[in-house]
Amino acid sequence: MKLLRIALLLALVLLARAEEEDKKEEASVEKETVAEDTKSKRGIYDFGDYHGHHEEHHEHHHYPVHEEKTLTIVKKVPVPVPITKHVHVPVEKHIPVPYKVKVPKPYPVVKHVPYTVKEVVKVPVHIPAPYPVEKKVHYPVHVPVDHPVPVKVYVPQPYPVEKKVHYPVKVPVPAPYPVEKKVHYPVKVHVHVDKPYPVEKVVKYPVHVHVDRPVPVKVPKPVPYHVEKPVPVPVIKKIPVPVHVKVERPVPVHVDKPVPYHVKVPVPAPYPVVKEIPIPVEKHVPYPVKVPVEHPRPVHIEKHVPEYHEKHIPYKVPEFHHVHHKIEHEHHEHEHEHHHEEEHHDFGGHEEHHDFGGDSHEY
Image (cartoon, rainbow, N blue to C red; front, side):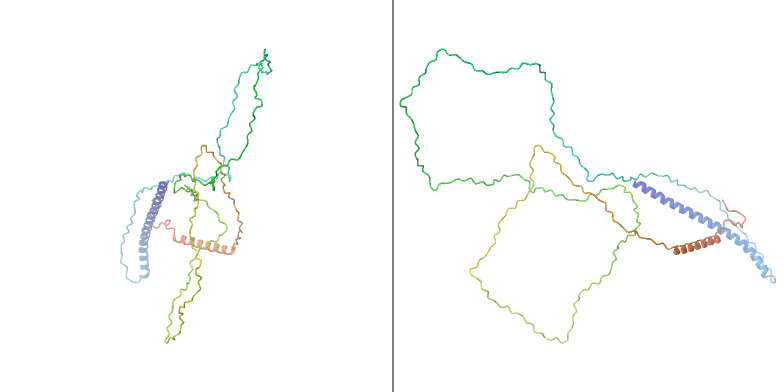
């Protein structure tokens, strides 16, 4: 596109130069023809006028000497000049027009999250009908014994009875004896962290949207708007300059000079001295620790989009008063000047229509 624009500009410049040269050549040819006509006519008139005037004023004097004059008329032979005519061809230029697409703000964002769904598939199983059902019923069974044998158990008479008697047993205990108490303390688990660890900081920056061919839009401005323009104003800045005043006889002035005097201040001995000892304080700096997750699940985060509202500012429409008298007066002056110019042109032109020489110079 840049090459096309440069080529068009060069063509326009060449056309303008060619037209100017053609106009200059035509003007020079017209001036030469007019000068020859006037010279030839002046020679004829001068000869006749000289003869008549001489006869009128010198009737009673000697006769004039007859002089012959030769009139040479040089005519130019027309030569065909090649004229290049530039025919303008319309070139279609595609100008993209911005088309606004209405987008609701805030617009909904739908995100599809895939998840597993168990689907029950029913498989047909052949069951015979009617089918046998077995049910177990428990009932007592009596087993007959032919000859029961008596069994005699020996029991001592009297039989011994054992009784446990509790008695105190002295256990040697050391005094003082150690008492074990479990004290829970934090155990540091070493976690490998990259140091310096990366810190993500969100920095907002303006995004410039590049437009290839912006279309100029003319905005009408019916209301005059006052634009303040800063005007440089000279500011006089007073700078204090030390001025030395000369005194012929200075008078000595006595100035009191203070002498340092030691004042005893009672100090208690011994006095308490407070000494600040800095204690190192551990400051916990939070840093991100990446914990590996086996199955990460997407989490929907709502992002708030700013809404844009148009705000209409009312303004007062100014009233314009037209002055009719001044416009009519200017109109009359303009017509008078135009009429005067037309009369001036009528007196100065129309030299091509008068043929005093008898030969036409039209080609």
